[in-house]
Image 1 (cartoon, rainbow over the protein chains, first blue to last red):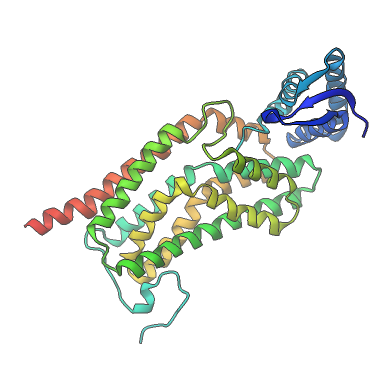
Image 2 (cartoon, helix red, strand yellow; image 1 turned 180 degrees about the vertical axis):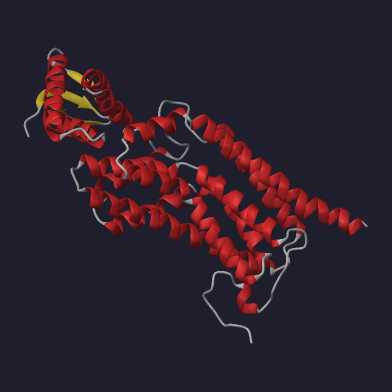
Length: 95
Length: 261
């Protein structure tokens, strides 16, 4: 996987020198869409559209946190599929 | 001739003692066990893990049969661990106190119920969005990660076992009271009580399993849980207080009043 040259600071301030990975984001959006029983084709097109939006947002940012990515992704995903966005937001706050 | 069952959870059978509780008849005892199990069922950690497990399984494009198998294994794990937990406590308490539980122990158990009830009201859910519970974050992350990588029924079963242990802090009250009440029952009713507790305490997971199996959206289930979390907290905590008060009056106050006459 090739990542965009943006440093992602993980939760709790742990810096792992990780680039932003579009594939990772894409997979998590697909999983969120499928978990609310969205057809695979629709899930893939939503994931592509949301990843494009996040890529555009990232263009002028040298460093971001993983929380930033979650917030922006949820915001864009909400316009395409509110239920999937809800499940995406709930990932870390269910247990 | 008494039946010899060395590993029987309801140890009273071994001693051939048909014990009878002084103040609670069998029906009242079973109702107390059922009520304690309902309070147990209102606790949400197992349901949260079940929701995450289902979400990850559906998200990984696994078949519906696989989803059902994994979630059912998870519930089987929670049932077995609940059964073992109550049986273990019955054994320990029976070994320490015999069939006549001292009033001090009843009073301590009631104090525990009240303490846990207040703790549930104050701390059960974290003060943030979602349904995250007051369990250590590292532990919650571990459960989350495990639910993500669970692929086989055996892993799912062990996740169910772990889920019950994880909420021990909150379920200890109803489990202790159930164990104390079961000791006072005739041997056959002890088994009935054990089954009642195990079935009712996992009722919430079973309902969620049924909803997932019938094709309900996980987001709707999770939204319902989030919207009603204050009610569930109030019901769980209130139930513990009511149970504590009832058992205290039945086992401690009546005994003192009866002893004074």
